[in-house]
Length: 324
Image 1 (cartoon, rainbow, N blue to C red):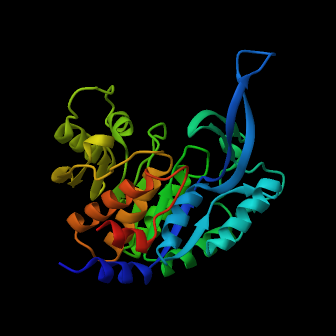
Image 2 (image 1 turned 30 degrees about the vertical axis):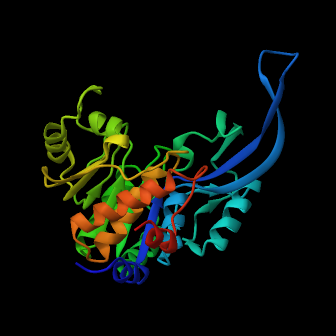
């Protein structure tokens, strides 16, 4: 078994493309010092405000934090939020694909109000999904993506059901990935009835797994074999990783369970972006020729680190080495 440092070095040699719903996350935090006289709601004295990459951009940030050459293709506006987003992408050394910024479109912005480490509410600004969809009828778009897909080692579809990931997108990307024998990972949203001609990896959480299998969620012990086989029959991924929160993770290959591991999270502060971290590390490890068992242990360790941080966050190689 190779060492962690060897695996991280191999991962840093990769080039990965992220396609999906790009967002900007804003955190406004402060202290509650009284109730408002206008309504029974807390008044917060704002102490800090920060912006971080969210959605598919957080997946890309997780990759770039590992030293992986990362490209991102999504849709955002040329508004104030879009400019902040592009500055953050540049700082993280993430390369946006031409045509991602669109005039007249509102950048998806999620604002979280936090007081005493407790999220009080979230404010979402976004448009209808059709505003963020890509046109795969354009010759220039097809030529550009074909060139990029030929160069990268893996593709991650980061699906938040905001419009970018639809059937034309899946058909084009999956067929290109199959021709080039590239790893194709999908972090799914069950509301999408998508068909995949080729798929390496899916990473749903517990609730999403029930929905993808067409079953109502149960709150007793997770029926791992039944759900895994049903999802495989519908989507045919080579690997399926289901995250089960405090119950850990389970990995199946072609519908058959091959590994189940307990969570290694010591402290859970914020689960925002944990799924992004899991799909990032599992995809990158598999692309770097790690075994499935090594890949799931690495993803589990990274997820345990990221949920102990405030807000949407990433894990660095140094943090990983320290955790082991």
